Image (cartoon, rainbow, N blue to C red):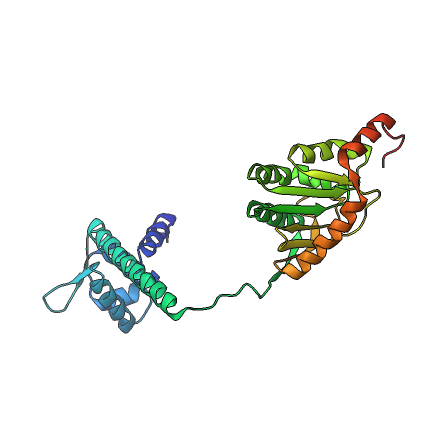
Amino acid sequence: MSSDVDDFITYLMDFGLTEKEAQCYFYLLRYGPKTPSPLARSLHTYRVDVHRTLLSLIEKGIVRPSLNSPTVYIAVEPSTALDAAFQRLQQEMQEMERRKRKLEELSRQQRFRFSDEVSTYKMLKTTKEVVSTTILTIGHTNEEFIWIVPKEGLQAASMFGINSVVQELTERGGKTRAITDITYNTIPFVQEVIDAGVEARHFEGYSGLLYSVFDRKYCMSAINIDVKRVTLDAPAIMLYTDDPVYANYLTSTFELLWDQAVPAEGRIEELVKQGPPHADE
């Protein structure tokens, strides 16, 4: 079949026809009224299969049988056929809406119990997946987002738009705190974080677990990730979960480190006074 024919068949299927029905209807449109036998040969199927297809098209108002014998089958003009198909789809949608309302009513009567007690886990396997999940979760965070990241991760937050959604969280009234190792070379990235409304602190030489917690329920923690490779296709393995027990554990660890860390502004002022290092850190 040509691409135009394929498109025609596809659009017919969008209106609720099966592939066999769409092909049969198209054949009748192109070649005129036919009996089942030539239709079966042209469509490479059996007469009984064609009969079933024709009966279905008749029920849908798309094909009409003749009154004479032998019976031939006539395709209804496309605009009329599509109007009939559209009307049928509307009726089906109305029926589905009626059933939906009835199910909602029955659900209220049954008083079903829904539980948030079961936690779920997901493995994120690329930097791209980590970034997209982080951005999506920050977008649903209402109160607080905390994260701790080695200094190399600050560049990723800048490059991949994480700081922008953090800024939006700040504007919504949410709070963000961050811990990292601030060096002279990372000052611009730290300043960008601070400008997004983040309360940041410096922890000297931090090289521990990279993790984040959202509203003390959702959390992400690194299992294996190379933060020095700042590319979306870089491999990464991070655990994402909505387990509040694990989130509370990570939050408690964060608070211990937070108490030991120093405010980012003071660290930046100290580094600026010292000037740039003689060698890259």
